[in-house]
Image 1 (cartoon, rainbow, N blue to C red):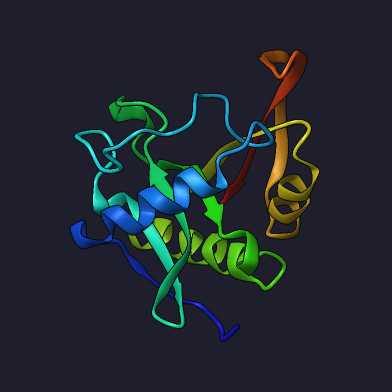
Image 2 (tube, one colour):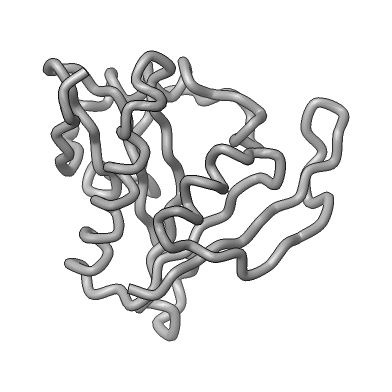
Length: 159
């Protein structure tokens, strides 16, 4: 697979992103039920997403958002979703999206980037750590997924 091209999403990406979201949904990384259309809504706008394309096809996305609506928290952005097609995993797409999110957060004036990841998602945690994110807190057994209690791990990095 060629190196992915990363860009900000546009409204025309909705169907492709919705398809990717449904195809990659798993309790390994999701605490909410499987996604339903629409992909974009008043809380999740196209400009909140960076899209990875390879061979003119969407192979991944990452979503940036504000962790709170508070003015005192405006300097922080949060990764609020990351998905990579199964066939594109292990080829640097997730890493490229994280790096693009760091640059986009800087461009938007953020001083800090945070995220939440499930404790049992070891591959994602390792990827985030390799990109400079550190564990800043753990909420033990925060979620009950597939009959097992799972920790919510808070990670972040300064920009």
